[in-house]
Length: 447
Image 1 (cartoon, rainbow, N blue to C red):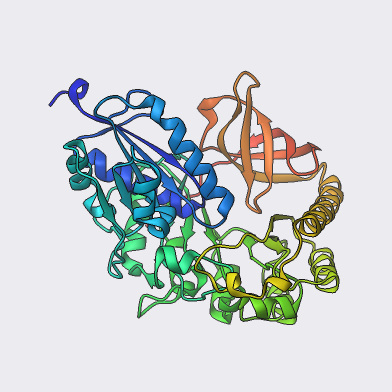
Image 2: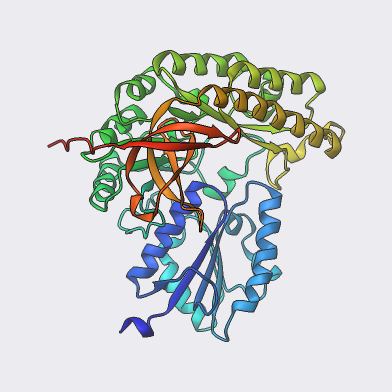
């Protein structure tokens, strides 16, 4: 069939990097089945909304968006909901949104072309069965990013934190074979990309039965042409000495770790079932920083968890100050149906106004410290990778340092994917502006 008669698919993605990676897999699968990807829903034959279920706000946003998408539908348009929200709500979504034909969880994408074809004939379908063997190894992802590649190495989670819906929406933890990850890394380099981000719900607990995460870091870091290796999100309990040594010894592993803390209070951490104490988290940070000079740390923090007292919150604030995070993603606790936290006594619920005040204080603490550190960096020079055009008409590029700082520099689209040395010239408190000193030459290819 010629390209003008090929059906089109539009995918809208919400949530984490794993969802972005899953959308790339879905696009690749549908492209292999004769669909063309489009970047707008107008007139698309298939509209898929790939969803997140971490917080209630994210789900409400998707419900609203599904209503908005009705105006883009033609008489034969297929609308589907995929991802974690689809897994969590299943048939409820078909009841809530009558124009939705498909509800497909994270393990159901192999059947996507068949289900879409059925929906185009008027059939409605749900595919939310877990498949503990599914890693989509034979899929060829259609990547959105041309500079860095998201590579999932693990699906699901076994930790079962009391606030978290992920074990329900993505199932038990299972890891890809190391050889398959390395194969994909070679393909990424052949496609012109030099930065790889390894993805997993607790990525550093990776274990394919023969190899651990330390082996994986060394193997991916040894692929010729890979200049930067990142990973997200690790768990503080899974930084073994072997993993820390691999991070320190593999030159391409970047000097940045996003290390979710969630609370600085041991009492609250226990209620969250995080399986480490405040002291254990501090020890993990100390080991990482001792092994990797200049390591930048970012984190996640939840305020207003059931039972959190003023004293507990003060412990979180003091931890944020003492550990000097570069940045933090901060949230008010959001109860999710089906998680143990929703069964805690109502008397322990933290009032919304109290949680909001705590969140504001936390954000101010993070930003104040970050701004002070960033001001001290002005005049220093760093290697950056040009990631994307920052703003239309501004002739600015967004670049990233190895330790994950964002630097805006002048330039145009032809510079995407290049490595530059820049001098930091200004800061907004969170991002930097920079002047290009020189272009970095590619490293010699091994092998």
